[in-house]
Image: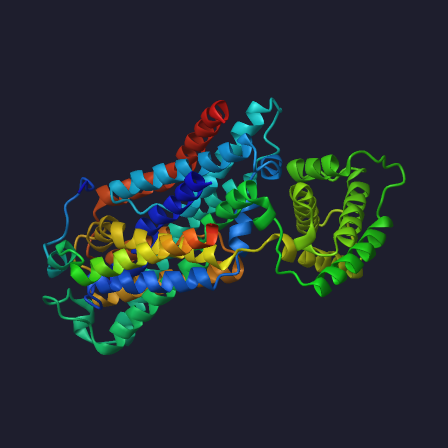
Length: 472
Length: 46
């Protein structure tokens, strides 16, 4: 467990090298803040972002992993998956950082997940790639097209708008010596730096937390598989809701459905995403079983040690299957039943999807320390190797406002955009709008790294998964 | 430090600031966060 946690925190540490540069590059190059103060400031707000996060993104990442590996996370296959994902992501992030290329850590992690999914399918000798979440790959494809365009155009338009509205000449000239910008634009730059840091922590920063929880569940299931903070009263509610939900699902069961092992049928549904005649019967049976067992145990803290893992797995399967049903709209359910299923899912998620404060603090510290160690390379690329001229105050503000607006919009509307790509493209956009010229060699290297991130991460993690399966 | 095969813009005062180390205060903050963090994680795991 120690090694696995060390590697997982190492992933967050390297993540800190990359992503926080998005927040501090503009404040450093506009002399709004001293570099070391900017990095510490950003680290503090990343920390606050991670600590106050809900963990929803962390578990969203976990749900992309092959379901059969999640269910056996304490086994050799489960550890091979976690190590392959983390080591592949660390290697690509370190490689791009070494060359000062701001690549997306999220794309790297999702690429690694897809790589493990494909390798797992191939090693299980299954035909096709039904266990791989290709929607995520498609989202990254969209992001590769959308992010640079959004960053470039929005930041360029914002700079042009500023030029029309604000006639302060020195905003559009390179800083003289170490002179900071006028008070209001300095405040704006610090505000956007703070916002990008906080939102990064509350979103991207928590992606490793889901993997850390998997490691803990695999190694110490008695402590981390079920949420012991669920009260007896909430447990009683859960039992009642389980019975109601099982009864509600009864009317959707196909008459010809045959009872098999409900866990196998639901696992197959999650893996293939194909709703079969047996699926609803399996779901109803599974939900009924969970409710019966819960009534027997009375409290989550009292679940016998030898039953914890299976009980959690049942809950995980029920929650994931309900998520898929809601997402796909198949089968069509009455509005009242949809509300009931949502209520049931919230009970199950309360029992299984929790992140202890110490895990959040550990991730936040790893991210912050990574930022303090590795910020320079990416900051220098963003600050001075994209455009041919020094970043002006207005250019810094336009690029950073665009980045903060994008990360906020991505959070609110679930847009497939990368903050890293938006900020780098934003700086390029302001350079173009200012007729400063671009350093095409850097632009070419950046684009190549962005396009290669997904396939390289996939291949690396796929290979590592295969290799680790031989070892574990 | 490995760098991209590109030319950087005119040297600026930023370079001097970036080249400077974190100083004693920065190093102390780093070490303190590291020690407290590792201690906190260990205390929760044991």
